[in-house]
Image (tube, rainbow, N blue to C red):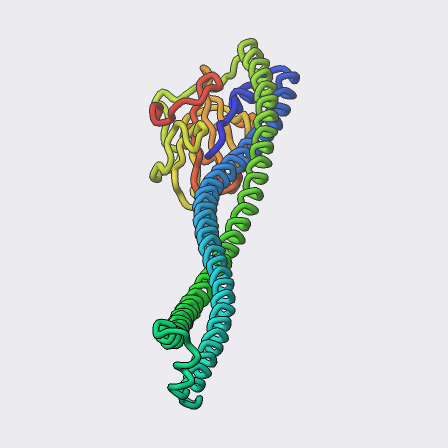
Amino acid sequence: MRRGWLPLVVAGLSLALVAPAAGGDVGRKAQVDGRIAALQHELGAAQDQQGVLTTQLSAVAGALRSAQAAVDEAQQSVDRLDAQLAAQRAHLEQLNERLRVETQRLARLQAEYRRALHILEQRVREKYMSETPDLVSVLASVSSLSELIDNVEYLDRIGVQDERIATQVRTAKQRAEAERRSTLETRRLTEATVAVISARTDEARRVRDELTANRDTLLHAQQLKESALAQARETRQEFLSEVGSLEAESAALGAQIQAAQISQPSTGVPSRAGLIWPVNGPVTSGFGMRWGRMHTGIDIAVPTGTPVHASAAGTVVYASWMSGYGFLVAIDHGNGLATAYAHNSSLLVGVGQHVAQGEVISLSGSTGHSTGPHVHFEVRVNGVPVDPLQYL
């Protein structure tokens, strides 16, 4: 059982013998204790839900951190590729501009080379196709031998200079063509690099977007679980508040009943042989804390319908349904000692009835908050639960 059995037994110790006011208190206390048992069950469920949500939220938070790290890493990859792509595109623009300039320069050198060849061809044609000058005319046209020599050398220098200019222009044109071919090859490689980096960047963006979507899904799940956890905590707090107020009322009623017992003590006489086991079966749950709550008795596993015997002679002070206990029988044995038998399938005694030790008082079952057929057996001294094994 996940709830404590509040001073129930004492509530009815003198139902048959005390004043009517005490009997009314017992009935009201039974209702209060029943509500407490129900609330404690709901509180246990709320605590379980809170624990599950906390565990799930922790797992989601861990997955969210991993997802965010993956998104950050993917974004860094995209940023690096974007930077590389921008650099390569800038380089490609520079190569395009360089190619434009080199193309213009090559065109200019080609034109200059054609002009130089044309001039050189004209010089050669004029030199070899003109008529041979008459020696007498040449000699007559100069004033001295040195002037004649100067005219011949001048013509030779002009021819040599024209040829040298043509050679220089041809060399410059060839160099410009080589530079242009090199620039074209570099641009081709750069364009291929840009295409590769662009494809890699697109793929990195796709991966980043998928990771971002996964992160957003986890974030939404985290928000939902945080909302559910907050609601579970609020519900748990409401249960605690109501249980606290009811337990205070139950304690006050218990004090009133104990006062009635003192004024009119029970006539029940405990057996001299002590308590006997109500049923024969294995103890599946002992007395003490269980699931964060006090387990106020022991659970004895037996099949449904097993006869349940009174542990000692006494007077029945409760024989009815009580919330989590299901069908419950409580017996006052006198001197503040009482026993209780819960989760019965049927009751065979009534309130006020005197029973002998070993008398069959009920049939076992699994009523109330129970996970299977068994007898929940309690021993209470002055309303306080004690370990039944110390009395058996």
